[in-house]
Length: 109
DNA sequence: GCCATGGCTAGTA
DNA sequence: GCCATGGCTAGTA
Image 1 (tube, rainbow, N blue to C red):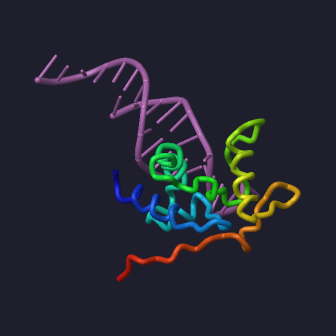
Image 2 (cartoon, rainbow, N blue to C red; image 1 turned 180 degrees about the horizontal axis):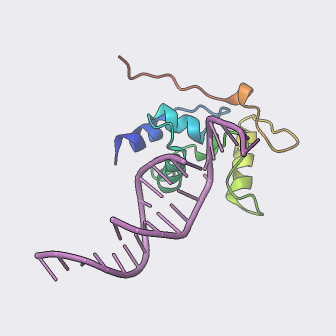
């Protein structure tokens, strides 16, 4: 597994309950500003194995990107976030200025 | 190698 | 526009 993937996993594991990050934000923090879609891939393939809080990743508009039909992952995602105390606006968006998490960068200099 | 395929995104003729 | 991944052809050996 490459370093980007490893960092993505670490970063996502570091998001506390009640906070969220966007795909692009995770990608950038992992060292690849254009790698948002790769974050999606990691979420799909590693969430179970690495016990990732996959629901705490949302799109840049503050919305849930997973499909939101009946019994879908999207609804589950919203449920999980609401259980952590996050509230949604009437149009189904999360207020990023309030809930966005900024990971502490530990690898330095 | 080529090409289509994504739970995306910054920038906007 | 971006960019890694996966399926599927060329085209060599």
